[in-house]
Length: 208
Image 1 (spheres, helix red, strand yellow):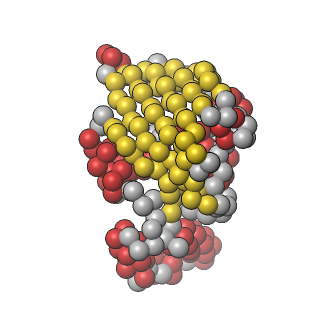
Image 2: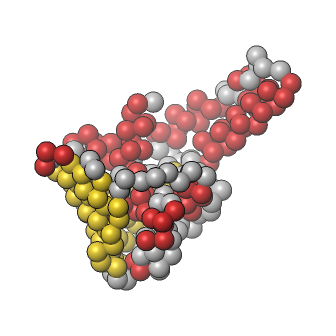
């Protein structure tokens, strides 16, 4: 579980997903020309990490090389996130059809994110984060558009023939919502079964 959280954090740190998950006033500020002046990017995108100052992030990125993120699902998830008072401020430094640069200022440090369109379906990105004490971490990579997806899809999709999907299919094959909720009764069991079915469906969708 810890490893999975680390993998997700490595992907969530990338500018594309960060833009899709922005809410409230930040969403308005992030209507970037590089994404057609929409509040968030759409479709399924794969990330290729080219460089990272954190070796663990680079190693995790290689393990996730076949993964893609559904921006529509990310935006739908963001709708259900309660807006909170942010201590960070955003400033769009560049905003053209080919280049977007965002400056994020927080008490714990600053992050500059730059995205440059390489081709119709490819965007290069660079993230430079400076924390307290002047510690700097960087990432460089490439996003590739991999097709359409919907708000009902799972947030992440994996190569159906990957080792991760093979393991996932083996683990979920024997799982049943009824067995998982067997000790509950009445309305509690019905609610548990509903949530378990939804969770299993989303998990399996990742490898379709």
